[in-house]
Image (tube, rainbow, N blue to C red; front, side, top):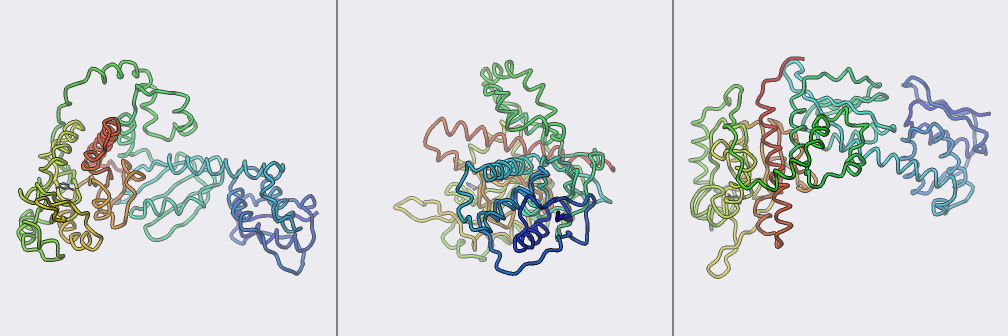
Length: 478
Ligand code: URA
């Protein structure tokens, strides 16, 4: 009986080559034994010594299904897949439409399990920050149910391109050094050091988003299965939050007063390399800025303001009508809402450096009114010059990006605010937290949506504060 030994658990190339050789050689599925080499083999898979000539084309849908199913932890998956390949090769072109067929049904179920596991991995990988010879290094431990690390590594590269990280799992580890992705054999949980500045962030973040009035333990554990709890810093808060849910609901109902602002946050590290006078000089030079045409119709440049050693920088989109006249960021209606939210999130605005992605008001005249117009990419790019200077001087531990324009200016790419909001995004210096712009809240037509979105906005601001508090504590060597 022909035997195929694949080089590793997701050896798609090896499987494909062997399936081709077997099908062309006329070897039916029940005559083949599939296995995986116990130790990763650099020299590839061992295909059976069969030969055959002819065309070997598989339907695209089958290839796509097979690429997912091969990640399943079921040892029978190769036999199952070859069974499907064999039938397609014999001419069954509509194979996958037969959803009640036992083989097709089994493959679909496995693919679904892999997709679910993929979703969990993307949601529940939690990086720890460790001190690696003076450099911050991010390490995560994750225990997937299926062999999904290789297929998902590029997702983490895209998401965390700017930092160096390793994701360790029992069967395979992925490493990104900022330029190249590499895989090494599996690891154990003990390989992840305990020094963890981000753990506190996740704990408080989860506590902040936890709404006791909506507590549904069943739904919560299905979204965040207990299996993952041990690796989720925030899970430590769950039992206590559940225990206190009733009294917290009551307290939330009774709470009318705004919470008192927290103590001023300042960086607990070396002062910025650039002297403050340089920031003052940049501010003075920006008055004459002609980097894009927006200076023409605007009243004045609205530069950022706040302590040059602020731990948090807040970046908005551009000055509005009020800001253009006053020469100060966030003093109009959006600014008033922002001030209220900052206070409720325990942040003292006077301790933050507040600025905008674009420093001139862009508008369209309508009668006596000036209507806000969103800045274009070219204008954002032109004004990045000033934002970069501000960021280099202030070097904040956390940058809060209010809305898509701020996100684009800071991250250098277009962003999906609802998708990336609230989670710590690594920046070249410090962390970014993306959230909605307060003007978005003002524009929401119905009260209920506004209240709901305002809570989420508070959650993101609270998360940023927690991250800044954790990031400004010195890292202990590990
Ligand atoms: N909106 C912004 O983005 N910035 C301001 O300064 C005011 C409104």
